Length: 437
Ligand code: MEV
Image 1 (tube, rainbow, N blue to C red):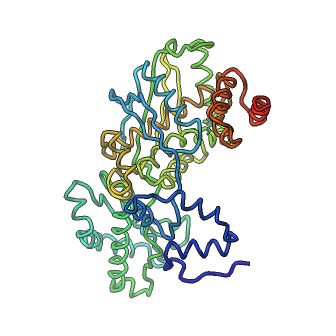
Image 2 (tube, helix red, strand yellow):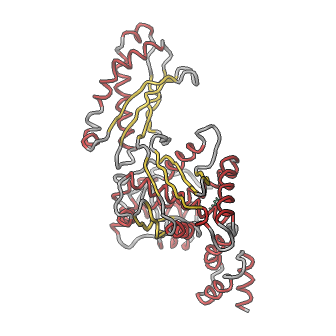
Image 3 (spheres, protein in one colour):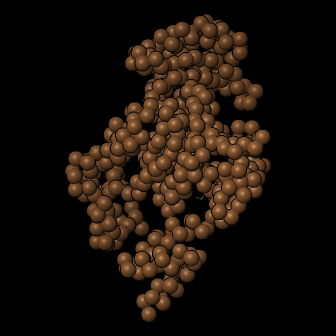
């Protein structure tokens, strides 16, 4: 059985690996070779990656793909996408091409405010904390002047602080609800630094506030942290065209549009479908979020919360047919950065931004929303016509062939064969058996 290790983070990379090898890997040289295979020869680049997190022992690759032909607000983009799922980039490219011939995507940022809370415990008279807050609010704002100096210069910074009583939901619970404009930064560090300073000043001022002293009830800070729920930082993307322009190989425009809208209504109504529906949207969104070095966990958490904002988890996209026009849209909250964080550090993130023509945060919000909408369009289009597996398994074929260690010639033969045959794991095995025999 393994023993606990002390001072692990202080060990060198070689010592860490040595400890892992001895403790968990039976000193298996193959395991070590695997780790080493992914080290970068460029030592400076490797050091950069080592320093992103603690205890780095290797690098973990994901494919960096590109989906071209995205016409967004009249401008053509090739979207950088980092993802492991075989069919995602192909589906995005398909949707981009489809809408390229039908007017492209329109996207628009609706709002850009972020927020965070100082969570406060207070069990005294409500009127006293209300009066106290009114009195100290200017001091709280002044207290963060150094932190927000640069952000203010650029036109951002703290927008407001409100005292909100949450005592009906939780006894003694108040918030300092703070709103921020963080421009091109995602703003997590900026917001958290502001909140912690506000909390400190709030508590210090409270210590000498006579009405609190008189009742010996002082507000106490529980914690201060930004919220990843950003319903005031919203973006909308949309496609639309006359219904007849949706006609495809085996289906009329009208039938396709009706089936499509019905599929959206089902995802609107049924949470079990909505989760998968939205997962498909996130395939596109996360791939771009990863490629641009943004925080996909924050984006995921915020978007799913938004999908439940009316008390029931529902579809993030909407579709309708009105006066012969099919419209398909998405509205999502997105707190993204095009400066700060990994954006200035990771060479591939820098490449992704160059590829996107160096958008600002608002433009990136628009592009990401479009990626989500496009991905959903591709999924629903397949689901209501051919079914998802045809395209999905076609893209997955190469993974199966690699898993079965097929040669390049076998792969070529398999791709030709499965052009008109259904791909499944067993079908590929039997095809290879036959070819090899
Ligand atoms: C697969 O990654 C995503 C889909 O399941 C999305 C959907 O069902 O809408 C195809």
